[in-house]
Each structure stands twice: as C-alpha cells, then as structure tokens.
Image (cartoon, rainbow, N blue to C red; front, side, top):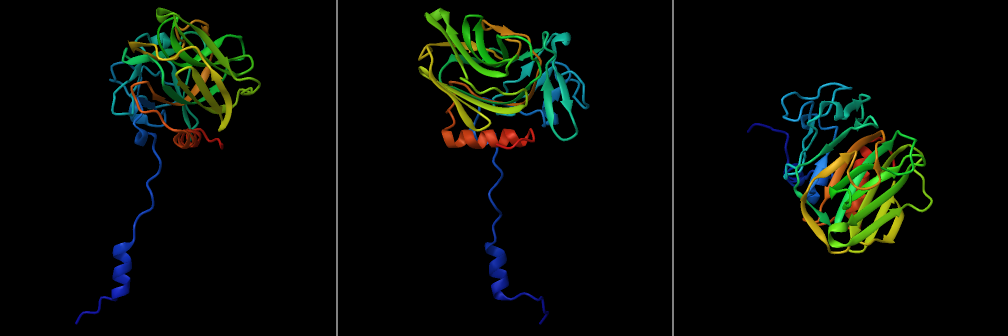
Length: 270
C-alpha cells in the first residue's frame, strides 16, 4: 500500500479549516454611489470613457461609480476637469480652486435621509463661505451641500428647499478646525436633524430645517456647486460614499467601519 503520509486527524483538520472573514467593503452596504480614485479602472480623461487615466497629473473627465447603480461623475468642459494625482501610494482628485467640478446625471432626490462619507484635504486657505465637497441640488436655493470654510478649514452642512418653503439651515462645526490636513468626515441628515463626525469624533449634532420635503431627479455634484454660498476652492478628494434618500442608510456602527475604510485609502489613523 502506497504511503501518502496522511493520517485521519490531519485530513479532518484540513477539511474543517476555513478562511478568515472577508475584508470590509463599502459595497456591502449598498451605497447609492461609491467613488474610489485608487481604482484605476474607474478613471478616464474624457467624459465618454475613451481615454483611461494612466498617470499622475492627467485630467479627470469621467469617474465611474463602483456601486451597481452606475451613477457616474463627469465633466464635459475640458478646462473644468479636476486632476488625478498620486504619490505612488495614495490617490486623489485635485481641484484647481477656479472652476473644477464633476456631476452625475439628475438621478437623486434632494431630501432626507442622506449619508455621505468623504476623505478630503482642503488646500485653499482663502474665503469665509463654503467650498463645496459634495452636494445634491437643483438650483442655488434647492439643495443640500457638504463643504468646508477654507480660511479655517471648518466643516459646514447647508440645506434649503425654497420650492417647498423651507428656509436655509447652515449648520457648522462649533469649534473644531480641520487644520488643512487630511480628514475623514461623515455626515448624516435625517428629518430635522444633522449629525457629523470628523476623524471619528462627533462634531455636529443639531437641528436643521429640512424635514420630509423632497425634489426628485437632481445631480450629485463634486467641486464647485450651485447651492447658495458655494465658492471656488482647491481641495483633494480621496473618496466619496453616498447613500441618498432612496437607499437604506448606514447605522452608527457601519459608519465607523466606512470611516476606517476611507482612512485606509488616505494613510491616516482614526
């Protein structure tokens, strides 16, 4: 009989050995849209997707959504396309502070609830209004926007829906300044309330005017927005995760995992 060197206990152990848990992915939470500049296959220099981004410093005309929803961001004006940047380890989108911006097709509702997780670094230091990081909007007076006041790197959340008689909420972090470093922020707006975290720490927990009103089929915008008070400002965007009102919103424990995932794409610790 051929000696194979196996015995019964060893075979049993091999059959019952299991792999560890799969790494966490934001896709497991069914986001409305997910954008990761480290995923080279989602980046294109032109809005048609004909020319891939292959090197640092190339323009970004199309950023494919990693979710199953195909809510891609694009820019048809060549001069207004952000730039793809990398240091060889980390990857980001960089705006010029003049006119750069991206937008999806009009597919989202302006309304609550909504959750966004953003990895960013503010480069501009000039201005006391809001530099738009991400917003869902129809016009300058009908939308919701997450941004940063550049002179002190202060997080702001703005909402207004004039079409339904909802006056502006301009909710800002009380005394926590970003310091123009890399940061992970999460913002979750629900009916009449908004909560935000900066680098894993709660910084906003306040009332806001927008409750159950909504306006359907509007774009998600990154960079220069249309909501009142948005100004041009240069920043780096390391990733964006969005759960619009049509999606199941992540709970508090999941938001922590989403923030940690974002931080890993930026080289920061929370």
